[in-house]
Length: 532
Image 1 (cartoon, rainbow, N blue to C red):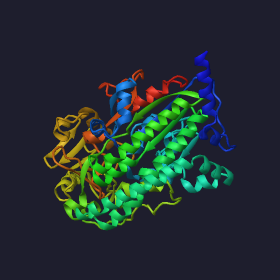
Image 2 (image 1 turned 135 degrees about the vertical axis):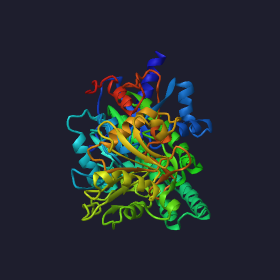
Image 3 (image 1 turned 45 degrees about the horizontal axis):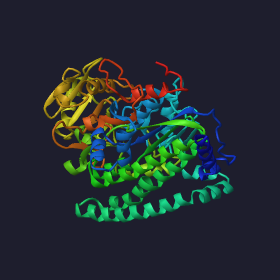
Image 4 (image 1 turned 90 degrees about the vertical axis):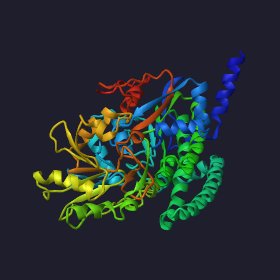
């Protein structure tokens, strides 16, 4: 009797919350489901490596997630991200089951005959259109927020395949916008207060950066960028996702970018990067609370990262020139086309809030080479300028003259890759330990996937990589934390899942990878088994 009354009161309270009232507008109808229908919430913490996640737990930066581990029977798993260790490749495998959907974050696409960047909506949509047909979209009938692709979601916002604030405002009736603002007035106050605090910290960090002799212009540009991504986008994602939970969508996926944003600028182990984790942890707590209150479904909440980051030094700072200039000098030619991102990832990500509908001119040059490098992994396309018998000389020159730590290509034939480093020429997969170091956590997996990457249909003639087994690695744009490459820190992600999730490794190495997470999600109650 008492239990029935309590259940009735809980249902009554839930029905009159501002979330339920907000989503009953005509534009966002509530999805009615049978009682206790299962659902899934997937929360991605972008760029947080397994090692930094564990360090944040020890330092008390993630109190709610620590509670999940200690009191809610959650388990922590280490995941292998695959190569390249970047969100477009990881989400291609997670959302569609397609590995190495792109060879790098930025590359020359042979099919389209132009340079592709995963910060350009047109390019991302073309990649999606290539991999989506015939694939089982993980987010079918659900929602996606702040992702690269939509994953087949019925509703995708702040994703590179969609548009940001302008589209949302244009497609929302004025009455609905006013109602949402009134019903979420407390959230607006929270955003204003947190943005003010973040602004003070950002200004402090600006002067700290100047003391450390970092560029004033880039430091100044980073202030609004970090507020937009670390605070505004995070809070908007919480509000929108909790609305979706109240409506009863079968799957909700959201990606928190704040840590990755700060880590690119200050390094993955920096105090300011770890500072953002407290806000993310509290956001996760609020989403978990909303999932428990949903009257439409019984939700499981999964928390994971797509990849890690490695501490880097900018290539220009170490060599005094851009990598484009260095490669051009090595090949004794003038660069006529390049995709140069000297400010790094962190100054472009805020475009997800207000993406442009056009992209810069990226036509093929009249004279190669074409160099694309956004992160510690890049591509060099030579065209017909380098005869086969000269390629070994060119590989050595890129290492010795351009001072690029590691270069690899498909020169050793099918199933193999040639590698040039400061220690000489090697061949993969057999020389994996000499190339990657004996302590690499995914030694054989990375060696095998470097071979696959070298033979990728969109691969350049050479891949250039800033990885060093010993010492600080290099990132080609101006950033102090990076990912996309082959290091253990970049490829070691984590997953925090309920203890009953059937997560199993696949393949001969039985390594847990992002694809394992996809398989487990597709096997959840109410989902069909994924196509092999």
